[in-house]
Image (tube, rainbow, N blue to C red):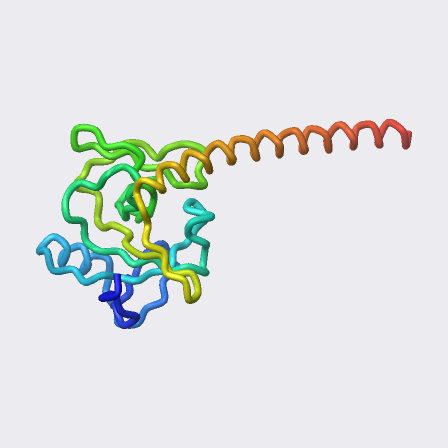
Amino acid sequence: MRHLKNEMPRLNGFSGSVIVQRSLSIQEWRRMAAEGAAPPVRIQLNGVSMFPLVRWKRDYVTIVQPTGIPTAGDIVLYSDYLNGKERYVVHRVWEVREGKILTWGDNCAAPDGWCAAKDILGKVVLIERGNRKIIPDPRKGIRWGKFWHQAGKAYRVLESYKAAAGRRARKLFERGNR
């Protein structure tokens, strides 16, 4: 992806954690994408749902407008509604079925749910970590996502045992100090 430059406009209004070079609102970018003329945008994500692939407030992602229905393993930007408020999410496509897309963040316990293909606003084509440039590979992405979801489950089980052991130790300590 040598044609991508550091001088790309950056998206203003994306989850509150965006560094703006030339202001381009999400609504303007969406309008341009609908017309087929949206420039690539380089943004810094806010959140840990794609960790460890994308690190919060450290890595940048470059997003381009989609050129059709994404495939499983692609990382996409889509609009979603939470408590009646629109938000923008960058997650991995887990499954595509009859024009519906199931997304799932690599560091999330469960999938997001199905969204319509029309809700997909863009596709991540580059992840920048310092001087390193990572081009996402959908095939490797699905394997990585499956591994990370299993590792996350094991981690959550371990944390629950750790918390239970701490509660038990506190009870024993309190009994001993009476």
